[in-house]
Length: 356
Length: 208
Ligand code: HEM
Image 1 (cartoon, rainbow over the protein chains, first blue to last red):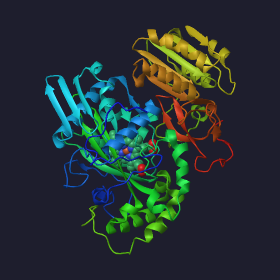
Image 2 (image 1 turned 45 degrees about the vertical axis):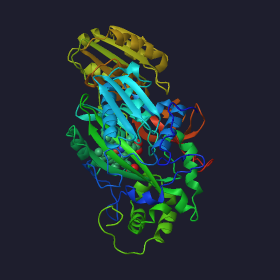
Image 3 (image 1 turned 60 degrees about the horizontal axis):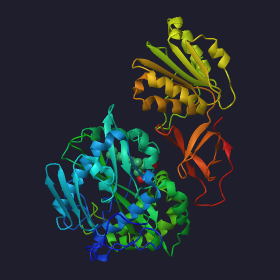
Image 4 (image 1 turned 90 degrees about the horizontal axis):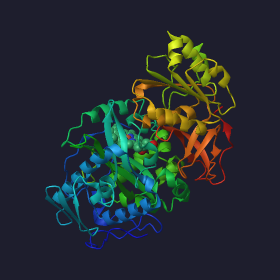
């Protein structure tokens, strides 16, 4: 497959790695501790876990509003491969173009501000020049004029941005997923879900509806203000560092779950964390939802003693309906057994930071 | 009486449309689309109309037999709507509906009755022309067979009665996930034996 960008610059920082085939994806040892470990206590159940999305600790995934890490270039190559194989992974209903421009502006401004050595945005009225050095892109275009971009604005910018993104239109007291790109998703189909509302696309989730989680979460989101984004975690488990675990390709990656053994557990089993952030957009009033996927294999995670203890307890005690929904029920006992060897039973401190 | 003939549906699928008995409403045009046993729902609704003659005088009825073979076209035609059309199948019915929609004015009331496949596809056409959801009523009657999209190959298999079933396009064994897309007007089918090839459970009739 040919790429329409030219990576190469900063190759000492951005890893040359794969999320398929030979699976060379790794977290550099000195960067494991920046992993956004999602458990702030020793057990887990669905909740309305939202907090303001403000820049956090230096040297963590929370330092910047949009985290660009050592996997950026490899993830963008993987996304281009997925989209070449299946263009239905990116959809935008016709009335979402303005929201696409909103999100393009937001991403360009934010990256150029926080990573000026990698990204530059020059503006002269509606004539914009965007320089993305890690991907070798230098492009002048007219803001709000689609004919000056090689893709629609939403696809153009999300092909250069880690994380799956969806855009929600607000109508009739709910949110409608009327655009989305998903190439690093935890087993849901953007093609199937586009056009659904908040309760509809969440239909398959167990337990949470009855806990009132979605009613409260929607109420909260409808009040979201421009300039005051929020974030939350979601997580699951993935055998092999697969970014693309789409239902579309499940017959290809599903069988990998059967290859797990106690011997290869630390290498193959990955905690998959989604750092999700939500932004009200200024012109369209739509809400952008960024689902940023982080992967760390068990071997990497258990180098942090607090995380090792906690991960064991969460997996051991999780509600079976959640384990089934997340797709690891068949391996859960083996995972618990492996993790128990890294849990000495000592108490853990509250919060998700590795050192506290 | 009404409640007893309404097809019972599991209420737990939150992405699935909500069905309720059709109620006559005031409107400039009554566009009625039905298949199979949906004809009974239409006849009962008209019988409840305060001024049935006036309603029929502004009604366009489009009908096809149900997937189980139920054909009540004669009974519907005998109601005496201003326009009546019988198509042999849903795909043959849709071009007529599209043509009628092209001229329909705001103030048109829509009544859909019968199988989920018919209701879903008709609703999708109506919504594509920009009519408000509030103008569309839906009553599920008759067969509960499902229209299912294979999430892998994207092909749609009509009239699925068993779970699991074989995708009529790519041949994978699919289970019918309780997840419904109005845009596609179909439930989602997902490969059931990907993790245990060749070990799909035997098909069980779940939808009649
Ligand atoms: C507009 C923003 C949001 C979008 C587009 C979105 C989308 C999704 C999708 C597509 C799924 C997968 C459903 C499936 O199985 O097919 C999901 C799962 C879920 N969502 Fe959301 N969601 C949003 C906001 C939220 C919020 C604010 C909450 C807060 C409680 C939430 C809680 C959940 C939970 C608990 C799950 C199950 C995840 C798991 O166990 O793996 N979502 N969401």
